[in-house]
Image (tube, rainbow, N blue to C red):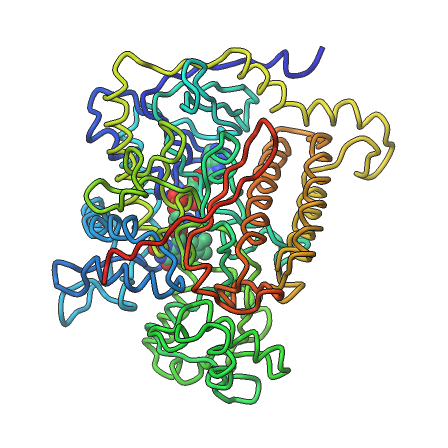
Length: 614
Ligand SMILES: Cc1cc2nc3c(=O)[nH]c(=O)nc-3n(C[C@H](O)[C@H](O)[C@H](O)COP(=O)(O)OP(=O)(O)OC[C@H]3O[C@@H](n4cnc5c(N)ncnc54)[C@H](O)[C@@H]3O)c2cc1C
């Protein structure tokens, strides 16, 4: 008898099921209750919403705030900014929708007790940059989580969702989700009318710079394990722009962010010989991307590009000039507090490497690539847009509904709307939840039905790695290498190596081409076959096993998209060496993919980019 047959199954009914209780998930849970007073609203989270998600690493700024009450910026300005930063390719309808609602979210955070910094002269929120305002971020996530907890019918913590369930009565309609409790091992079947996926972005897809015992310290949260993409992909939702991975310039070895340093401390970078270097690369970059290099602000990827070229030319390391700013005691305090509130590891790295930024200009580096939808990048699901401003081709249902009926998303999950960050993700969660409640009301008595066969099959599959381990461990007497199973860590390292070497990671200077991608896909295919033999010694490793499976699916998507786009649209994020230039004639478009779970094939297509803001 298999282990799985002894496991308890818990059934949970809901009208709206929110998967992932991070920023977007908390926004969705809160808003679903506002519009659906009598509805059954359930939030399920693999950690504990009190401190879960990328924000739980601690933040020092809310990166998206218009300041419309003071006429600082208008939503249209933000759309122009994001469009410019993403080299023209954003869903302007989605970005506009978030920008017009984000300020009210920030005002709620303050009302709920989030300590905001204020400019003593103007009384306004303290600006760090044009879009960012400074906060004391330690309590950010617990405050937002409290609102979600009070709004939800129930929050289920410590349950990792592994699969979505589809309706057995109507093809192409979602019916719920399954997962397991990472502490008790109970199997959960969530039946739902509408599902909102808000499960964060993806780290550890590409080989990180931090390895060995440091591998838990990546830039994006190590627990962001691509469920946001794998769950919809597996039920046939279309994805967009998955090739648009992000690479970040960060302080070396601790991934400490540079935003506050550039924007607030007014520090700047120089090469190893103390020279400004970005202008060295102006002409050659113009040859690749044309006029985009003249845009202001210079797109994030192009600033990375100059950094990478200067380093390849042998004039690294690139350093942040902190010595001048740190002469001012106030700025010195801000510089340190920035890390203590957000990236303590960077302060520890500096202390351990004898770096005092008052006396030494610290080194910068570029990170491994990440896949996400909320930063200076916009990979994710292809979603229907807002009724009042989305072009017809971007509208097929309810706002933020994917191409699967009843399946919604927000935050890192949804593609096309870059620069949402924490506040924009929360705002998008609210937008998605309002639409999901409308969807639930419109279904009336036509409720989706889950299939017993489907969830029983999934139950068997979910616990299979425990079974593999229990049986396979009898064949080894020492060590961790078994002839009949592989451990999640081993599988993860293999995935990261493939992505690094074939799909444009740090080891290949972010460069790839069609032959490399073709081979990469073959190797990913073999890895997928081998993951049937994952062995998990306990529930923690079972979670690692499913995180790895989700990462693999997202990686396949990234690789197919990278292969499809035959140009180098974002130099500094990645390079197609066989198509080294930006090609607006053929590729000023979105790339879309759909995975067919019956055949296992990926279908790629182009979608038009509509510019609705002048
Ligand atoms: C180092 C760092 C610095 C940042 N700095 C800033 C900043 O200064 N200002 C700013 O505004 N933004 C910042 N951000 C960005 C911000 O954190 C994200 O934009 C935002 O958290 C995205 O929201 P989300 O809800 O999509 O994802 P998350 O907030 O990451 O939430 C995803 C949730 O889903 C859960 N989950 C994942 N998989 C599953 C599963 N299978 N089953 C159940 N639950 C699951 C996770 O545990 C998590 O709670 C930063 C992020 C990082 C990592």
